[in-house]
Image (cartoon, rainbow, N blue to C red; front, side):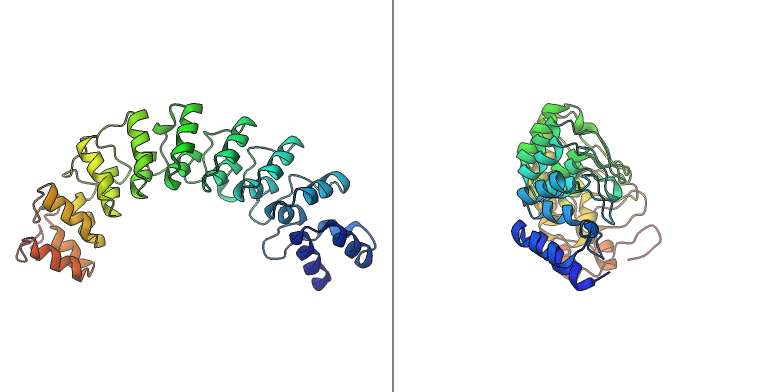
Length: 315
């Protein structure tokens, strides 16, 4: 394979100039082997690159005039439709769908074009795929569907749209038992949390497989506004323990999230020396174990007792 020739061809594809492309092919290739050139590392072929760059006329030329396959895959099993969805090229997306591209094609780790579209918060692309028959309930290898991804990214519009398509999406869990509410809380998406609380029917302290609640996730990441919503409107408990006996205060101290610790102790009157029912550890134990020096200072200023021992007699 002529590496320089191949590289030059791929650059012309990315540029999208069909006239220059025709001239180059006529000068450099004696047969149709140019159609099978691809990026060595990624495995992207000409149609991947043209679609990713949003060159609709070039995409049409490759498909209609030169019969490049719509189902061609790269090294991650990604098809051109994945690229059209991921890079928000609506006209390329519609052309590929109109010409027979599989709307639910799977790339590596079982990601669909709809899942990729939800990472970009593009309601037009999401709507186009759903109207074309995309299966919104499909899950990837981790048990995430497009709704979990939309909740992570924080598009209230897409979340509402998907719930309009399937009102029970709020109740789908991942392989580790996490709900969309966990995801939205962890990533600080207040408006999405509001949608889920209004349109879902979660238990007030819904847990994942590790025993974590959405309130714990919010405070682990420092989103006290979401924690306040969950505690006041959703009646989530600030004293709930996870599978290893840690409360939200323990977890916030462990990761060094000062704002969350202050909110729990000062706003919710949680005892700064709160002990785990299983191990007897305090937030100060965990902060010390993780080397959170600033957190240690904060806990002590809030009244933490440095002499308290856990169930193994450790201070």
